[in-house]
Amino acid sequence: MKLAVVKETLAGELRVAATPETVGKLIALGHELRIQKGAGQAAGYLDEAYKAAGASIATSATKALEGADLVLKVRGPTEKEAAALPEGISLVGLLDPFTADMAPLNARKVTALAMEFTPRITRAQSMDALSSQSNLAGYRAMIEAASIYGRALPMMMTAAGTVAPAKVFVMGAGVAGLQAIATARRLGAVVSATDVRPAAKEQVASLGAKFIAVEDEEFKAAETAGGYAKQMSEEYQAKQAALVAEHISKQDIVITTALIPGRLAPVLVSEDMVKSMKPGSVIIDMAVSQGGNCPLSKPDEIVDVGGVKVAGFTNLPARLPADSSALYAKNLLSFLPLITGEEAALSLETEDEIVTAMLLTRAGETVNERVKK
Image (tube, rainbow, N blue to C red; front, top):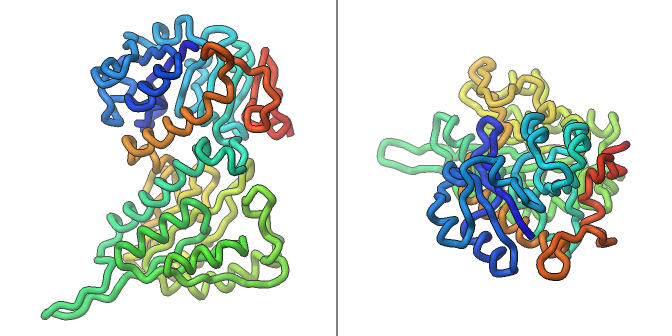
């Protein structure tokens, strides 16, 4: 199979869909790779390393795509990029399937597969790009919070006096939230966390953080079969908000991570809650790209609200481009054998539940039922 890797063009996107390590492994499996010049430079992967691994370097995206069966991307193509895709080519990447316009892909009869739709089953764990990227995002969120916060995080006892430990509250204990908790603990903060999924309580406790939640009957049933959080009732949200409002006023750093696939992010931190926090406190809104968990957050800005810094980051994994690219490239490496037939040729004639779940468009039509709805 002839694979193309092109340079990402979205502003601030520093990741790349293949690394010299995965290129070498793909070539060993019988694939050919063509990498656009400079595609990995922002992530620290130079053209010379790709060449040493066996890839050829193309001077432009057009040259990289010429004759390719499949293009590997981090983010979905812009309208301009989609128009330049060879007709009938296949594409795999993080395609933002719930909000992206599929029309440009269908116009080029692109067969598109979304890494976001990788099923949460044991067999697909090594392909789960959302988890690999969220893990790094949670870590980076805490690092950003520590950078913005004007004080030390751990307790320090010195001859000049004692520095009290920072109090960190993580809202949402999925992959990103758990990593934020773990990072905050490593930095010496006193950490608490909340989530609507009952299973999260034990996970939070295992990391040494205190669990904060209204644990009623609705809470006990608040998880989908796929492991995602359910949309909670207005009554539950009101009770949880009251508990959180009391707790949040005492916190130094709040990190919000709550996202529901295909929907606007739920509001977790109201304007009144923000104003109840001490000057110098920090809020990191990891859901700002889907409307935000705090109505005061703005994409890629730090908003000062009476001394409280509210920061929204739309692409935290790109702030760790080397590691996030390495993990994402390995997700793709694990996935490709599912669409490879004999002699390493592209083969999408399969009933594999992973492939069928990820398939978005084919032969000029949107075929994914989740996207159609």
